[in-house]
Image 1 (tube, rainbow, N blue to C red):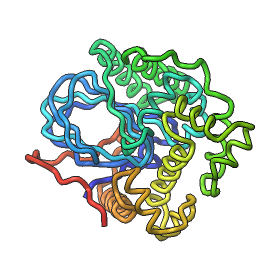
Image 2: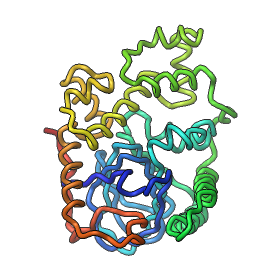
Image 3: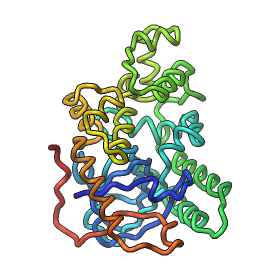
Amino acid sequence: MPATLHEHALFAGGPVLGGVHRLDLDIEPHAHDFLEIAVIGTGYGRHVTSQGEHPLRRGQVIVLRPGAWHGFLDCAGLTVANCCLSAQALRTELAALYDIPMLRRMLWTDPVASGTHGVAVTTVDPVAAEEAIAEIGLLERDLGADQSRPGRVLGRLVTVLGVLADGRAPERETLESAIHPAVAATIARFEAAPAHPWRLDDLARAVNLDPAYLGRLFGRYAGVTPLGFLARLRAERAATLLAHSTLPAARVGAAVGWDDPAYFARRFRTLVGLTPTEYRRRSRSAAHARLSAPAEPADERRKPSMPPPRVPASSVAGPTGT
């Protein structure tokens, strides 16, 4: 059963997690309740998501929104550098990242786009990839230091994101210098009350725009429609509740704005790639495994974590719905 990696167990109260790993065994498919960036270096392996399996190449950058899942297969000397951001911090102290067009595209627009199940895979040039991996290694060092280094950690994060943004292919169109105020105001309404029965007409009226024009603005700045953005946000909030609460799945759906349990199950599976029941089952399985494992030394608990590797297999079955 795939594991779920939890922010509260890994981040030690901070907004960022980072580490560089050399993989020679498979990494079981796993999900997160935080945002993950994985930069691929040298070596060989295959990437598995709800959309299938694909060979990994040096310079690929994988971004997973909270609730999304993936794994690594047939790894041989594969370098993977992880830079992870707290979902809570993305709504609070790191929320300003959304206002930077190149970072908004990397962390929100691409992985939120329709059909991606919260996973975006892009490519940067090899030099940028190696530079980002080196910076993530320094981030890991700063996070493991005996004394807290919040300023350095934030600086490393910004450097990593900047290196990856600069290493991407040039945009076909010039990005706007800042998000449109109407889009920002609408997203703020979604963030404040995702369970509200929002309607496009009401959202447009609140920002004094025609509904069709608001939809076009969202397409330009967020890559999805307003209600498509809301659906992804609801799925991410639902994933957190499924992992961290004992609410029945139907009540989780209602808590995020999907009152009909059948509709909630369909929308969640469309956006995350798993049914709510399956997502919760693997979360509980991972929690039980952590409780049963021997305690780690304090210095080890500060280190970034991946699911335990397994004996290589020729294939892996992706999670299925219930």
